[in-house]
Structures are given as C-alpha cells and as structure tokens.
Amino acid sequence: MNGGRSKRLREKSVFKIVGIVLLMVLVGLMFTIVDRLPVIGNPDSAPNRHVSDYYIEEGPELTHSPNLVTGVLADFRGFDTLLETTVMFLAGVSVAMILSNRLKRHWDAGIFRKDENFGGFEVKVIMPILIPVIIVYAFYVLMHGEVSLGGGFQAGALLAMAFMLYIMFADLGKNKFRITQHFSVCVAACGVFIYFLTGFLCMINGGRFLEYEALPFSAEHGAELHATGILMIETGVTIGVMATIITILEAVVERNSLNGRS
Image (cartoon, rainbow, N blue to C red):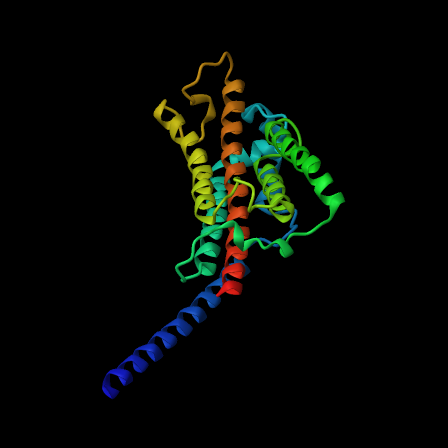
C-alpha cells in the first residue's frame, strides 16, 4: 500500500514539474511574440496605413451596410466574430461546469428564497413596466444594428438584464416562467449554431462562408440579401450572449443556494 502511495506522489510531482516547465515555455513565447507585435497607436503600422483606409473607403460599397462598424464585424471580420461568440459560449459552459454542484439536487423555485428578493411596493410597480421596455429596446437595437448604433452583443446584454431584473423581484414560486442553467446552455449553443448556419447556407448555394449575397433566398438586390445575412448572424449573437449571461447567473445562484441548503 505504501509503495502505491509513493508511486502516486511521484507521478504528481512529475506532473507538477511538467506543468511548471510548460508554463515557463508559454510565458517565454508570449514575451517573444509581444516584442514582434506593432506598437499600439503606431501610425506606420499596417492597420493604420492600409486596412483602416480600405475599410473606410470600400466598406459601404462592399458590405452594403451604412453602419461601418457593423459592416466590418459582420463582413470583413465575420469569421472572427463567430469565434468571439463561440468563445463566449464556451466561457458560459466553463463557469457552469466549475460551479456545478455534485450533490444530487435539482433546480426548483425554492432556491430563490423570499428574503433574497429585493424591493417594496414601488419596485413591484415599476419593474413590470420597465422590463417590457427593456425587451422592446433590445429588439430595436437588434433590428437597427445594421443601419445605426447597436447589434447582437448589445441586444443580448439587454435581454439578459431584463431577465436578471425579473428574477430579482418576481415570486418564482408562483410563476411558471423558469430557466435552468442546462436549458440556457442549450439556448446559447443554438445562437452559435444560427451564426454558423448562415455561413453554411451561403456555401450550399455556391458562395463562400458568410458571403451573404449567396444566401438561398429571393431578393431583388444583393444588398437585401446582405442585410438579411447580417440580421441572421446578429440574431445568433443576441441569443448566444443573452443565454450565456443567464447561464453564468443561474450557475452562481444555484450553487450558492444549494450550498446554503446543504
């Protein structure tokens, strides 16, 4: 028995040494790469000399979007935005996994104790009015993201905020509207899937990934297809951001509540 224990200790020591060596190598590579990157704000760097000017001069015509920011994020950097949405989804999943309780307990409205809710009469009067306004504004931001300020990330954050306000004052014990972290993770995955599906539909119809003019929809002009494609990916981003924030919220609340009841 002592021999087996000694062996396990030696294996742990080896893993620690290997981990420390890998960490030192990664830190060294990081410093090496940072030294080769252009200085922030350098007017002679490639982005400032070529890329930015190209976006500004050619962006409106190539992307058919009057909003330059949306055109860059959804067209020139569309694949990068997909990865950002995916990373945020994975962050939510990671938080849910780290904070998940191993006890065999299931979600129920009891984890929101009455004394944990806030507010008096004025809050219970204002919140039912404020929350629908936030939701409507979120959809306004989503639908107008192509032509004005706004977009999927902002709309998703607004919808998540509306949900947070709801669970902070609502009596969930009497309300049937409940979202578990498992359900919110699935919804966040659907948001990422909608984004990927938009690019895949373009490829099926003979175009390149996220080449919105190749979407298999009927339209008189390519600009209309482009607007449709941007709306589709922004919808995916909205769903992904909203559900990821809710996932993190539910994971924290459920873990704290279950620990308090253990």
